Amino acid sequence: MRNVSTTNRASLIAVLAVTLTLFAGGTSLLLSLTPSESLASIEVAADTISRDRQTFTLQPFAGRSETIEPEYSELGPFEKELGGVTARLSYRNAPDEDVDPMWVPTLEILVEGERLLTIEGESSGWDWTPALVQIAELDPRNRFPEVIFSTYTGGAHCCNDVRIATSTADAENWAVISVGTFDGEPTETRDLDGDGIYEWVSYDTSFLYAFTSYAQSFAPTTIHHLADRELIENTTSPDYHFVHAEWLKEQGESLSGFMKDTEYGNGFFAAYVAVKAVLGEFDEAWDIMLKHYDRNSDWELAFCEGGYDDAGECQNEKRYSDFPEALRALLIRRGYIRPE
Ligand SMILES: [Ca+2]
Ligand SMILES: [Ca+2]
Image 1 (tube, rainbow, N blue to C red):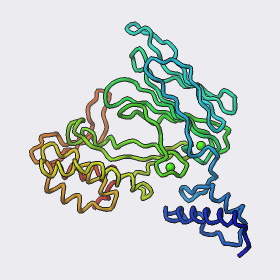
Image 2 (cartoon, protein in one colour):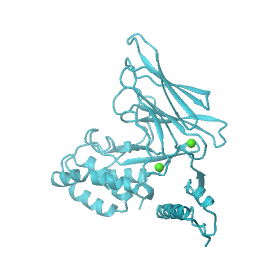
Image 3 (cartoon, rainbow, N blue to C red):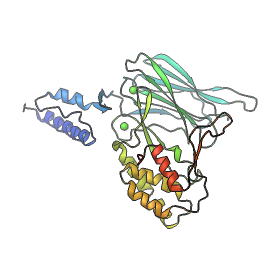
């Protein structure tokens, strides 16, 4: 093995520690390195990340983010910059017959000082619309951070409209992806596992109203990555088992409560079985659910398989005879378990 100075030896040890961490996380990114390779190449390798069997260079801004989240009635303009991308949020007055003024958010994005695009936010229909803008590295396949734009469009349990601006790998073209509308207020993306890349973290809305009312429903956490302008779900990936384990820990009191008093427990047991299935503990959770679920619930157990027509009528409604049957179907539909 080549000689290294004390300083370099220290950094070599640090790099090897990173290697072991990465290996423990399931990637073989650095396994081909031998002690004869130069320290410089090892250090470069430590600034990379492996995703979907590809290796990407981590940009200097990876792991950091900038957020704009105005307080009620603030009109801006607000401006933040990260990694050559500037986000400017301002409000324009777009009154209608009933509401005047009606302040609607508008996002401008500049890349390396050049104005790139303007995105008009959805209106809540109130005098002012909540909005959140975040610049963060979601996809390491291109050299710029992404811009997440969330606006609250009004209504209950539906209406956080999310769009993400992201560039192609060669940074020549940008696209705005409509992620969809989500329950709750605008929220930031997070780097759950500390690898420098932010994840889109939400919760599984298919559990809401499925077995009980909204207020009594529980839902597993969902995790998505952005990859080449597509959101890819990674909810059940072993990399994020710790997220589901945390959920279980937080719900410990709910579990013991619903094991004692089964009334309204089906919303909880549905999410509980799903989360345990992700962790490879489905059988144990299923038995607990069978023993303790609320047999007296009169919640309608049905799923609209064919979608809804223009009049809002379900095209093919599947009805279930009991809670376990309906739950098993949902778990299969959402990929928590495989069909037997
Ligand atoms: Ca990026
Ligand atoms: Ca991450």
